[in-house]
Length: 263
Image (cartoon, rainbow, N blue to C red; front, side, top):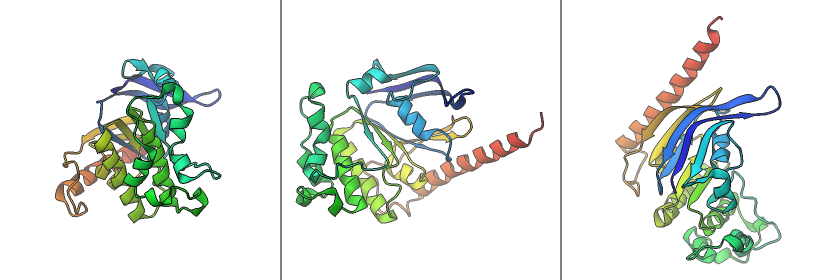
């Protein structure tokens, strides 16, 4: 499904409300993988929640396909992979992976993937009867990844689910996320503070600046999918990472300059 933001403002909090996102206009093509990066406080998670129909814009419009974001959310057209796995501690890995299918039978779709098959895809087929207490942090996030894809939603919103993991595990999980996306091709929007991760995973990187959050760059990642290995020494990868970091650094300088200007 296509995602479209048209001149979106989002204000949050009690009066006076704070403008968190300002004048965001963005179209994300169906089946694409887009990453959003930016400094803390720039509204990355608020942007995801707005796309998911959990936050209503104070100006402008958000559409998912031909629906409003709120309607898409209620019809389970949007899946969400949060920062924490949030597994049910009393249920097995198999039960956790199949949870969204079992509680959303009203919106069941034909051809939903098997949760057990998805667990196999993320390397957990042999621990289906285990409880979450027996899993490492990386294994728990693999279950959450399988659970999210099991919903079969055409749009997936991914909110830094690997940020608490060590570098190797984080890289492995990012590769598994991309592999599942390649197989099923939902539209993915992933928030991350890790520029390397954004370029490893996404076809396109949106860079936000802060206070209020606004788009300062929209950068295509022209690396082949699947990504060539090893990637760290790939000249195109390093050049794209450097380009994004330069934009981020420039946006921080611009903000400091603005703050120093006397009225």
